[in-house]
Amino acid sequence: MTRPSPYDRVALVRFAHQSIRKGSKSFSAASRLFDRETRERVWLLYAWCRACDDIADDQDHGRGRTRSADGGHAGLDPESRLATIRTLTELAIAGEQTGSRAFDALGQLLCEVPIPQVMLEDVIAGFELDAREWRPRSESDMLRYCYHVAGAVGVLMAAVMGVSCDENDPEAADTLDRACDLGLAFQLSNIVRDVWEDDANGRCYLPVEWLVEADIPPGEHTKPHYRARLVTIVARACALARGYEESSRAGAMRLPFRQRWAILAAANIYGGIGREVERLGAHAWDHRVSTSRLRKAEYLAAAWHEARGGIAPVLERPGLGRRDLMELARAD
Image (tube, rainbow, N blue to C red; front, side, top):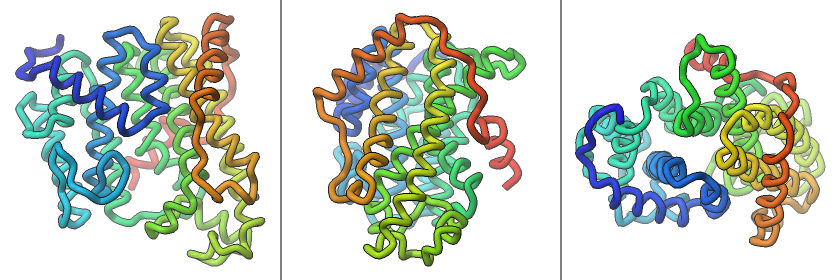
């Protein structure tokens, strides 16, 4: 442990498990493949990420706008919600009781895993972009957003699984890059799946330049007469996601078997969402794309076979990578 814990770990792990079961059936299914220690630490990390997301959007586990049992923040403006996230996270980093089980979960995790503070700050920066109602103008803007809200979480996941955060270690740094790639792939799949839902909430994470190239006026991309053009844009995002997903597999194969299996299963499940959106084409948003239990089982089995196989080929990164996106973030 990096420091003594002032928390009730058993209660926090129980809370975190409930949080992931409620907030993400897909991630919950994949997390069961980890060894117990890694699994519990992943749940603790998830609880913090979920709580930050809910505070930022004034939601409860990504749904509705209701006050959760762990404390809601209804009525606060976006900047105040962001300040709440920062304050509670700083308390957790300091190893203090926060009054929130989700942020105490982060505090407990930091007692067990030496996570650099900058990695946490990169995740919070994603909520800051949403608080500013920031929208991506270019492909690099979109990928930068994906880095903050998912790629940086992938890096945290790698750290939780024991990957060194020493940037001077070439293999460790490349493994962190590949973990980021998987997060980028996940978020690109989320973006294409949630086009309609995001539009209803006044958001669009597809690059403005892509929409302009397709001759779609701002704010009109969900109109029926632009559906065919939107499908072309979404296919472009899906191609990016596939490239990042494949790149990530080389990093996953460096992990111990149970961790490797879990990460490859998650890649299959989330990658399947993007592939299904692309397959459905113009009908992708008739209903929210999800993954059935049977399909999840198939993905888990496929991941098991892949995890038992040989080393994945080291592929060239399909676009901007972690360190490129970190530089963009620092330059803003």
